[in-house]
Length: 192
Image (tube, rainbow, N blue to C red; front, side):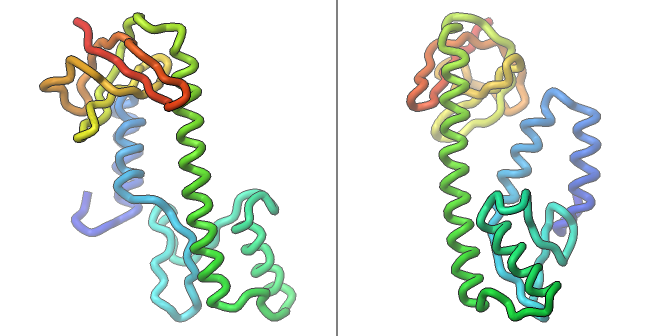
């Protein structure tokens, strides 16, 4: 990778790694996403210092999903409609800034709930399999613990024991020791 941020170089790197190491690619991809940080809605005015969209490697863009599915899409559609019909814009610049900040905060809150539901669903999926062994790969280590992702099903949990000298990317055999559906916790121990 070059020293300066280069989205096209990142794309080439990730495409190459996906072909070379499909087992570890989901974890690499997630790590890159975490390093890039969360997206946010911003207002970029004509003539200003436009940073663009790094992931898409474009300077001028707007984001929209399905018609009227989300409030940011509705704002985008109203702006585009006004521009195409020659009408005055439906929002002042300071209103757009306020709306962008609000939409970013609400989307972050929704993602937090979505992550919790996914973790609880994974714990529920595995709760009847306590005591079973699984093949896994170490996905992370921090002060909060060491984490491993099962290969089948692809579920992540915390290693409560046997993680000494384990580095990210190491393959190992784990045993499911505990789940907590309400909190979305899944705990493993390393087995030989």
